[in-house]
Length: 586
Image (cartoon, helix red, strand yellow):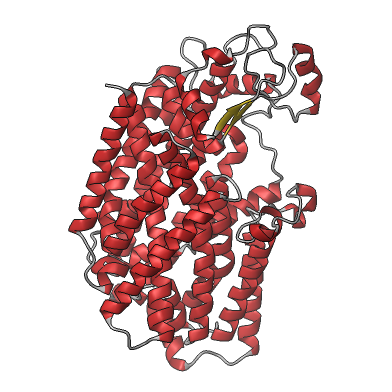
């Protein structure tokens, strides 16, 4: 059977499963739509949370970043994993005990203020739309490869699919769909990794293969990779180029931002009891760990196979580089999507792939007759292309396509639901139309989700970076805006509404302004970005991916200072704070 036909069958079968589950578990009440009726078991919620968490950034982009950035890419791995532990231990049980539908609802009641709720909705929308821009980019990439169409066409098709089951099923439908998606994506991620690990090192366990020797050579995979990349002018694979302060801030921003992500937090509202929130957090961490410990091996092996493909002979030899006319089928397919391109700069009909920005390597490259790097490979395609580069069986390639779609769609749907809940529950019902019927609120939620998909699609068309990089911006915004308000709301009785509002606005405006200035986010139509995104221009040497830490510190400083200078919260709110810190009662 041809690969294309097989891919259609595998992806089609997974789609039929998701849509069938969405229809079976269709939301009929607002409770179903927002928090799945609080009836999800801890194991199922752990799987759904893992699928929600392991977005296109984790499945598609993270290993690609590690493949191309090497050591520098590990900040994403450390930040996202550590952040989940922070969320599971310090926030999830307390928020579950509070028992509200959304994060803005928690902030409204804890800070006894409708204004605080509106500010929280604004923060949530900024975070979620930034996050979903990355996800929709991932959706477009996967569909473009799967259907062999331009990435824009792939994005439009993905939007239509998300619309069907996110708008129809609500949280209840999404939860059980995500359980199925977790099973698909983790199988799709680990199976090719096992095949490739066996192929390269004779060891079937990717985590061990990462540090093992290449088969029959006695040379370690990482040692060999270092040799190849430095011979082509790239930085050492196992050495980083980021400054210590930037590594620290990016890692911390990703960690703290995780704990402020509304679409992950809301998952802990779907279980029956506080104890179940802790248990589901533990299961989710277990399920997430499987992928996160596999990713470094996937990244290293993908880079190794790519370099060996385009540089099959001796570096500098006349016939050492891959002849363009003999390029493998996977290159032709990705060229159709626009995510891989080749320009024959020296007209020799062969592919030269090296770091042409390396001034020290320039003289050697010139002596080889090379006139610049000729191959451009988008970071985000590496995981999807990896099985093809390694010549794995067609059914494995089809499986990875299904896994990539599952990862991208699961998080996109979760984010769109959070946005729709913020609009319908927090703004329409909570602020503007308190007397609205449940049926009309549900309709408002679905209409909001539909509009959110259109905006998400627009943002995904022209994101400000790779999938994982865009997601990092979302984490920075969450760290700077919502996280301090949630943390102080649980652990600091003296925090009041004036402090929370001032803190959220300060953190959000500072962080968003910095990202917009250097990367461009929502204001590209107005000419953003306005500053050259280089270390020399950054505040304290901190990149836009890590600036959320400074935003968070500003938020804490402003929130605590303003709270101390204004009236303390009412007595009943202080009792409420003491009560939610004792999770055993619910």
